[in-house]
Length: 182
Image 1: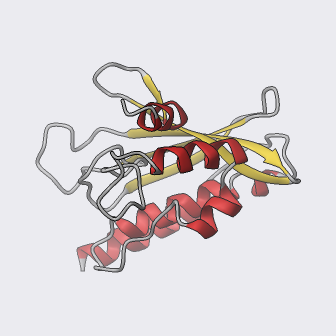
Image 2: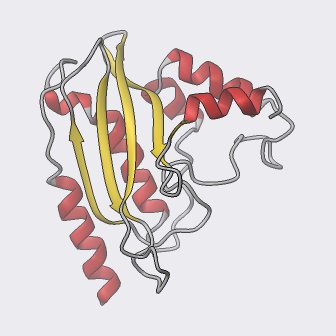
């Protein structure tokens, strides 16, 4: 029963996500690609044993990500470091920034005003709330850089914050390193 309550609470929180005008179309459109990625990620970490949703499958790459992001992803996917099935260049979930997580809790999203054509959509959530780990109460922050291409908002980069170093890690930079074999 607790799991159902957590899922319902997450859905209610996710559906009521606030946002601010950001300059690409109307404010609701700016966060659309981020909402789709976060809904897939949230679903991936629920306890309902559903199939894993690939946030980089071909249909999402074509619709939700910038041309530059897709080019870097495809180059990284050609690397020998790509997973065994050759589908993903990552061996971890790039949104939760790890291989393990609990159902996401306290999910929030906010879009900042656009700066030089880029709107930063900040997503925060707790990914370890179901554990007794010391970091169970920590909040994970992911920043999506959203731009406009072909009159549509698309994700141009995904930036995670490294809790230990307080550094920001760009997924595009990571993909460039993977493509170079580093």
